[in-house]
Image (tube, rainbow, N blue to C red; front, side, top):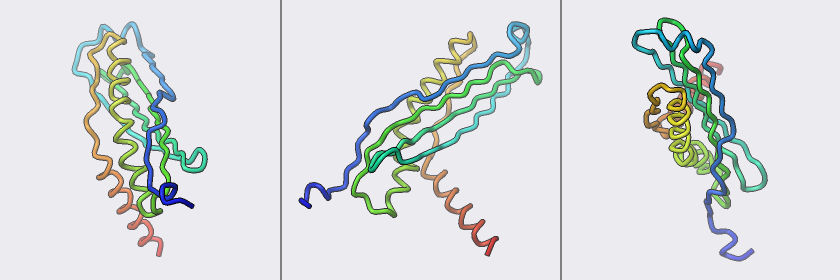
Length: 151
């Protein structure tokens, strides 16, 4: 094997919108509601190998907005990316998939969510910045805690 073939490599193959859903179950009546909307945002991260050295990493945002306990809208968007990751030591692979890849995908997801909500006639919801490293470290700590509790 040549030296070049063994070099670590990381490349974005493609960023794409994998799934998008918008529901306004109480329209048009809810459009006349007065009050401050409550916004709930849930984020989810999913990663899986596609083929040798190619990984799909998807970030899903579910945004539910209610006013007076009536749903204004619910948006769920899944933005994904295909990443080529080769010759990376195993202990470095998971942080790349759980931190670096979502950081690349997330700005696209934020733009999609804001655009879709803007098209409902409501002001866009701008998702806050996310520290994927802190999320990853929290998941590791929780897994270690779960393991200790089960020991």
